[in-house]
Image (cartoon, rainbow, N blue to C red):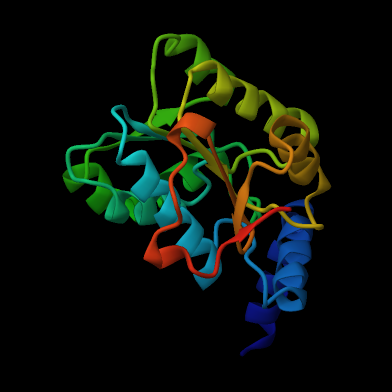
Length: 224
């Protein structure tokens, strides 16, 4: 690498230093948390929880709603597990990502990630805030709401409250861990011990909708 190229790269680093700071922070966080699921990634146990949620929702009518698209990885998983005729709606506003990508770049990347699901798996993207989605879909009756957007207490509580208000029989979400106390607090306040855990995926079923655990969930833990 020549001196001029090195200087050019240094100039770019200086120019974009504000944008690079969160990227470096995320990079270090990934390195320090390789055994856990972070920012749209899931573990094998998490996948079992998501599969169980989709299976249970299949006993009911209505679309699956995912609150929090990020990069679309969980969206693709949900799309691959549901029945083909079931509509999947993922809600994202593309205003935050761990790599500080501008919204238009974040949106483009995610749409490319979801290309197959959008074309072939009855999947839709609602491009906007969760609050906007709730206002625009006052009469929707989901079979499953999967919550994985803002992880602060207030955001999670609003998402849970909306899901409950729709009468949704299966409500689930990601990142029920000590690293996200807002998620834990909101879930515990609303559902108490009436949740099932697989990895960091939590699931609540209305009591009248609950059924015995299926074979795929032998590693599940029901809170006592």
